[in-house]
Length: 66
Image (tube, rainbow, N blue to C red):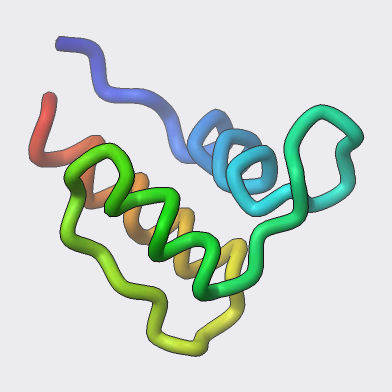
């Protein structure tokens, strides 16, 4: 499996969070937890900045899957 570069992961994180786009809903920290758990991933938002937290989760997933 191909490991995605960090700049692509950042764009995906922004989409997941609903930042600066009209395509995806804005997600609060609680919503992010629900989002990841809905796809059976055990992550719980820790009250840090949503975008950076989501990026960290995607980096972790990127390492585990690749």
